[in-house]
Image (cartoon, one colour):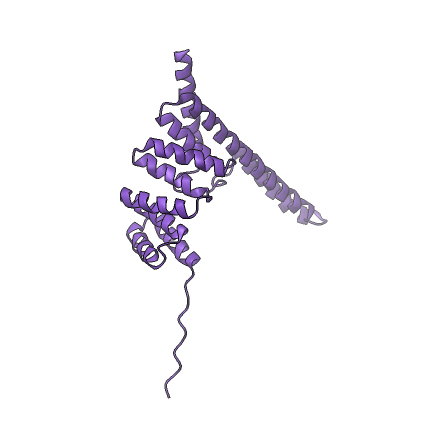
Length: 227
């Protein structure tokens, strides 16, 4: 008597998207593209799959396919803020600065507190030689970065204070939390790398913040020369 066939495990859309993302981040773009294309063939109307396949196509240098997929995802899910944010970068790479600006403005409209959206808008304004608007967007992005760092530092200090309070009585029990709190305070003063997440369009971490500062300084200098 033969054994009953084992049921085939179902793979969720989320698992497929996570695998494509992992492959793309690891630089395994050919594998990411292969899986993304199979996913699109299986679910041609899924906005997240279309969007991610567009990102992979962009990374592979297939700009027409990237734009086609990104635009489809925008039609299917027009309220998802990361879609126009990444579309902005893809249009910018294709030299379509008018479309890139429209997407940057849409991303800021959908997510006004998103640092990366203002960062992209600053870059587009600068490339279009719209210096005053570029300064404004860059300043807003930098302000959001500083606010995020303050919130992050406050959380770290709160964690350190909790560790100190929960140490209990006794000198031996109290020493280690003080060391931990000192480390937390040191990290607060230095700033913690990686506190801001990344995406295709790039988020203003250290290098991006420096780039924004240079952009704003150059734009202000040019404005002063004009005046």
